[in-house]
Image (cartoon, rainbow, N blue to C red; front, side, top):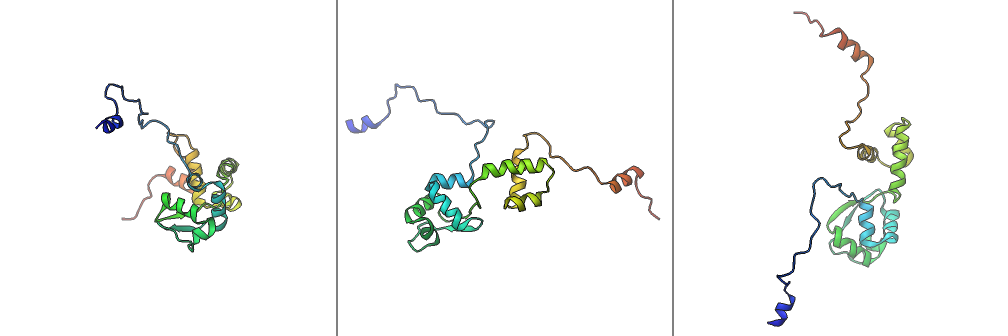
Length: 165
């Protein structure tokens, strides 16, 4: 009986103050690369990216020694990834230098380089470029719309088109 009481928390102590959830607190965004590094380490993550970067990879729940992922990063690292990502299909990032790439995307877009050209030069997808630019925008700032084309401006000035009855 004493053993059970010794494991129970004392009722006279004040509860510890746990951090409270605030919907207004800035959310910490972790990339898939950061999650992979957290689960298997930087060296194994770099090996995984070198072998499967840019491809969708299935992470088995219980990897066997002959599985693709186990042959690439080893069975222990594959088991560690299975604990976190088991039965998921992950789009493995192409490179691990995301921070430098984000800065270059923002700088190139500030120089009016097209989205397609940025993606081509930095060897990433256009979707990723749009995502970085959207995350870079300050919250509450509306997206910039391109100015209307000249023919559309002229049509709007003339008013509705008269149609024959």
